[in-house]
Picture 1 (cartoon, rainbow, N blue to C red):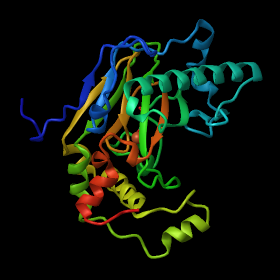
Picture 2 (picture 1 turned 30 degrees about the vertical axis):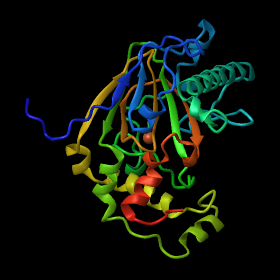
Picture 3 (picture 1 turned 90 degrees about the horizontal axis):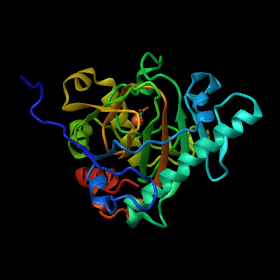
Length: 297
Ligand code: SIN
Ligand code: FE
């Protein structure tokens, strides 16, 4: 068959684990993750109790937020609507996912013990396909994760996803080219931030902290890739279906990804400072600094 691109994207690695706890076989796989691969565990379901299955329904979302989420360290439930008893049970379910995925991440990546920080946990009961959004928020377009209001200063975004769809529907993703190639593709068209703009956005509350040049470049990569329809259509990419019962782990600030379809997923975000990586030179921050030949924070 004729391929539209010369480079094949083959970045998903499968592992046989059937348990989240410490007795599973896979450990010390930091290098695989830091190389920008997707770690997939097709036999690692997050099991819902009989009573919890009713939460697999869009009606629990309050209609304002895209996802239902838990904010740590407090563990407040956001974006959900319902009676107090149901909300407590929903919160307990999402909390269990946070705890299991944290124990799992620390088994897979012992090098991160003591420095990996738990971010929000999200439950996504909405159908991906047909969601109406602006191009910038459209996650069916290939992108690396970067957020306008939340400057990361180089801190890594590690995410543990699990498809909990009860009807056999896969989470359909596309994944793309390696980060260094992606950065080189757009580097020439990335402009410097306007002088004073980082200060102003922080002062006005548009950003939670100052946007460094790293954040500026990452946002431009995110936006330019999403706006570039030829890139979306023709760039090296592969389709990946994550069946229900599959858990997958990825540095979403490094791996080009897009969600094309699916419903009912849990996701746990973790943060890790660049210095705490086993090989900091693989990070987006260090990669961009090498390519631009200057410090970016
Ligand atoms: C994303 O992180 O872009 C979306 C992932 C998903 O909803 O499957
Ligand atoms: Fe994303």
